[in-house]
Length: 153
Length: 264
Image (cartoon, rainbow over all chains, first blue to last red; front, side):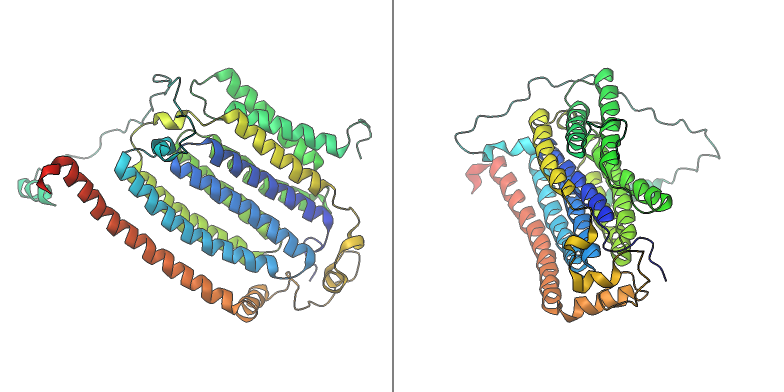
């Protein structure tokens, strides 16, 4: 059976490493700029994806399993990291009511100045256009007992 | 290679592409006021950067291989960029899922069948769904103000450009001659389509029973690491549950303190 692409070809290695580097740099920019905690974690996962692509590319080039095994452990650690980090994100949200990283800037170094949002646009958000659904069927009769029970649930 | 533009060396091409990508990211990142001009300019510059990276990439063997790799790589990169520039975090997560599909495609092209499928199953199936659950629990309705501004987009884009420039320049210095620096013992059996196809060695990632071999390698040479990873998973599970329960208790205590400090 002939392989689809020749293993050990530098062209494939070069292109895959380039893709991995671009993904890593995108994740870096995302984690530096975005303020939503969840988007920051998505950016970190994007960096991990770039690493995985590079590792598998090298593994393909050298024809051994090292990169594959490392990527499996990257997946494991990413799962652990996501579980613990999302718990912290939920805790932070229940304390401040926001997913904003700047809500925790009281933890900064004493020598750093406070970051202030200079211009917060309030009106640029386009109101979402929800689809209008045609009414169909008949309205079911109201069940008073069920309505009462639902309040206790 | 570039017959019409002799001055366009690969290094210059990469530098231009990286610069265009940085400016495009800076224009596209949320910066408060939405500007249609900046948005369209950013999209155009992003397309220019992508074209530059495609031109800087080396040509694979045939047109079909080239097209397959280009498609999955473009999906991965474009949706990765959309992940970090989209305002709404829910759309961000969905773009990230699409980026995962592209990455899985790249892994499949690279011959990592198990990892390609595992990326889809573990990442898109489990981790991303967990992210979406947390988003549904925590996201206020509408776009929050902190989703519409970002921290220092210019400096971050420059930092990303410097990193990407260094990485891509060092990647571009890879020798085009495969025989110069390949490890002879392992790569010789699988190098080059010009040679007759060698019988699959123990290390051939393209063998038919690739997943079984990967499992053998994982549970043979790396058995201790697998055990440690299992302990790590258990510790993360218990730690997450512990933080949730203790955190609830601490929140309750905070509320009681805030309600009436004199009672305690």
